[in-house]
Image 1 (cartoon, protein in one colour):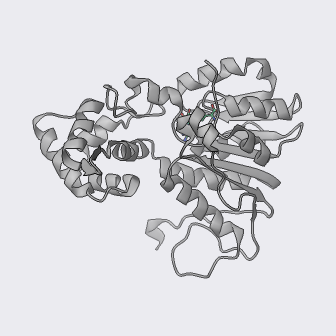
Image 2: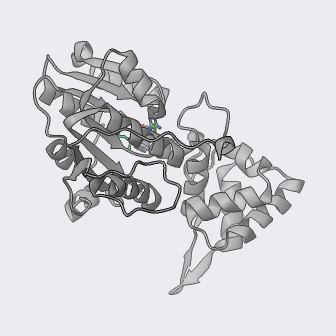
Image 3: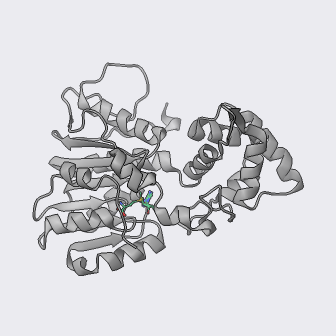
Length: 323
Ligand SMILES: C[S@@+](CC[C@H](N)C(=O)[O-])C[C@H]1O[C@@H](n2cnc3c(N)ncnc32)[C@H](O)[C@@H]1O
């Protein structure tokens, strides 16, 4: 089946690639964007691609098999971006792409446990070598921690009520399947709006997925590393699919695009006198109606792009014990 990447033309436009460029695709997926990248950078270019899901990596490698000489693969989390890229002999890169979140095979395969509509195990790991699964989160997290996950990563106002119901139910029978959990969510949280039953399971599943894969922390760490690796003039393109991710991206670059207001707040970022990045997308780029009609999964995509214009040095995070 033909694989359709989201915002294909915009991604290439903002990556501004030239022959011979050294590029990172932090989220290879099935290799759709990478294929376009490889065509642009040509034989003298280098593509380094991260994919933590073994099955997606295998499929992408097959799709990109004609470009073996120019491609380095990492079956790894992009949180190790800097060490893997420098370990491969590259101190600087010309461009980097993050196309965050899930791929279609994750949602389509019930066995991965990402879909609340399909019967499957409570898994939700991108990398199946990781230990933490959705089942562990749901059956072992203390009530307060569970509520925090639903509130912080799912923006669920009734997070405490749901956490309490899960902790009560799991005493009798631990949760093992997606539909078992979705049923409880519906029982506790479903509301009627304009005669239609609205089930917030999608948001709750999203929050568990973010926790299982530590997605917010991973993203913050990787953006900083990407900025270190980019050469002056290098481009970074990020596509996010929900507001929490987009907020992290927006906030991270807000601190770099203009001199920040001096504040007493603890920040992991430096106070820069001059902007470090030029904003290439004044407003996030979103898919057209035609693209959404063709590929419904593109509907929540937001693309932001920046160009590095000045050297960037992350400030070390202050350790708890040194305060
Ligand atoms: C939206 S898909 C990418 C689709 C891809 N751009 C394409 O055109 O086929 C996101 C992919 O990134 C992978 N991924 C998500 N978070 C990751 C991380 N922290 N490290 C490495 N891969 C990650 C997922 O497994 C998934 O395959």
